[in-house]
Length: 148
Image (tube, rainbow, N blue to C red):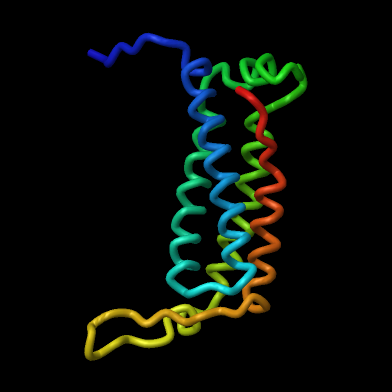
């Protein structure tokens, strides 16, 4: 026995995907703004976690049957391939993830608070996170928001 579901996956999935892209764009724009004045290690760790989640969400795009022609029809561009664009966006996100993972953990987490029992995160200047900010600007620029 199998679960029987009714609906067209492409038709059902695209509005949610569009919302996800809008959410991603807003999130990355807010992080760009945040990084312009520096950042705390806790914010860097949260950014990493969110980017991994976005990358995983993008990986699902290629597996939705009929999505590519449906989206091409919706945007009025027959040659548009949402799976190629999602893969390109995922690559940009991977580059930013790699940059964060390249940070020395001893710099992100500066110390352990032995009295309070918690992690003390380092602070980063705007200059220290400028390359990461540039990565996020590239991600944001790759997400063009249009009406669904």
